[in-house]
Image 1 (cartoon, one colour):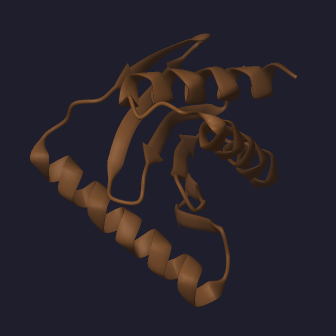
Image 2 (cartoon, helix red, strand yellow; image 1 turned 180 degrees about the vertical axis):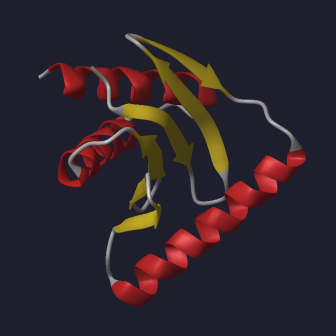
Image 3 (cartoon, helix red, strand yellow; image 1 turned 90 degrees about the horizontal axis):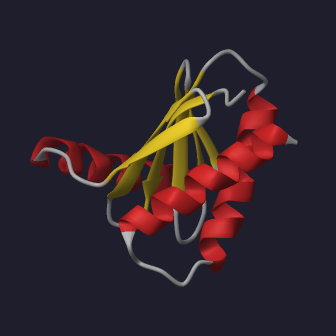
Length: 123
């Protein structure tokens, strides 16, 4: 069972895609209102500043929202009750997979990220 409910993939400028998990399926979203784009850009700026100031690559933004801050992508998620270390490990693994991806297509990035998450929870 996938404990992650939504996965947010950002690059260094803003939100690329949102993956919503339902049971063993997922849906990739790549379009949203302008306000969401602005909030995404603000989150990226906050996360990058946090990493620069603290040297930490994980940020717990709220009770059930945690993110992994890499050089190319920031992978954040909302999750059901679960071990945060496991969730962060899955975000790190997803980041590694996306970093090797040569595509800039948000749909493809979302699909690869979703499959990585599902694969990690299947282990």
